[in-house]
Length: 281
Length: 317
Image 1 (spheres, rainbow over the protein chains, first blue to last red):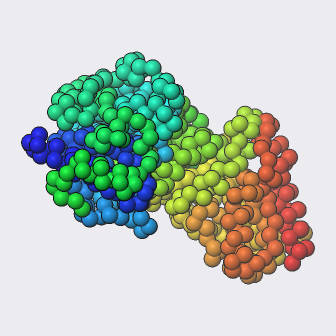
Image 2 (image 1 turned 90 degrees about the horizontal axis):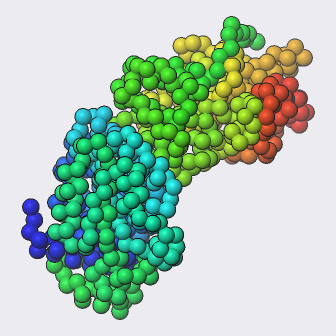
């Protein structure tokens, strides 16, 4: 197990990767990516039981599905720094002929990606299918998925949420990134969703709340509690309260940086707030 | 001229059910999903024999397509079952992103396609599904013509690695294809040899094409009849070989002329050998309630319509 300092160092480096990736091509989604940096680091470093290399079928290992594909910068950074591909390839993000498309895809053969995502609301269904395949294969490993809170406005999620509990898909941990922001403003101004916790509970899920979703220790505690609730007949939902743009002061607590890249000056400020730890790509 | 006869009429959806049942016995990776239409899709035998490999999704087709995509991750070969309308238009983006773009090995099996669904009317009679599916990069599109061919196609697609749209229907139609004929994806089947006009038909219109050819023959017109069960990839070679001989062509399908088999054939001809063509297809319209026979007559999708178009296209040579 990595030390807290090692995890924090990796998170800082991931933040730098995110900023530099979106700055270089003047496009991409830094806000949600920064908000989920600690989660991705905890997931790939401490939580997922992973096999060496990459195999699409993922037999005998835990699998992760990103439903809110627009936060691809954090996904790519953590995949690269977890050994799925060379970190230098982060230089190609969103460029022509790259495997690092604007939204994640299997189409270009990037190791670590098992489904295309970007058009919202589809990832939970896919995760459920993968979870049911695990059961058919007598494979006791878990399926993890991540979804935006605004994404829950897509109706397909609620088909999936209803199905997962009805069919006792209890090898699934679906995390909702509760940052309260979406493109047009806060979720409460765009389309208030009421209590997401009560909704999941009403649909028959176990719900675990992580109050500080930008604190690695809190994430590990909450996710391990989620893990201990698997295998008991119910799917598990984690409500991860995060701050959009976390770690870059002027990007925090606003939807303004959902899909906007920093300019040169803003990049310099952001990088200064997150000094190099493991080394830039 | 070859003679085609039949001893019984059966629905093509039952051919799907029989093929799926056989796959249940022979291929342990085949799994089936259904959105509350087990009886309509004739999936009962597979389910009875393989309850652990069947997933009842409920009335939630978008979720079904996503779950099917997920099941492929782990080596399963999912066959989804619902009506053609709910297999395509309702879930286009789910198929596009989670199945086609993601390159997942899902078999989208669609019953009650076209007007022959009958009395339920236009809400359920999709005439755009071939177009929707053939436009998706990498999607194979198959529309078999009778019970035997649908059964054979169902079995064959399990051995093909990639997304497939398999379209079939509700009414009982003549069973005339040989019971054990091998189904080769993308390989057209020559049913009649003729020199005056090519008739290329798919699905329920193949039998009508044979009936039309018989009548035309009695009138001294010899028709080349080709069964195009696979619309994508299209057997360009078979079409070009035939029109090189006949110099004109009629395409016949239970689908809108926009986006259907006919347009795919037109492209092949335009690129290789511009040839007069007439379309037996619906004319950019929705359907309506009625019996299958009434609807096929009203919308010009039967042997009479094929004969008229054949004569018209011969006159244009």
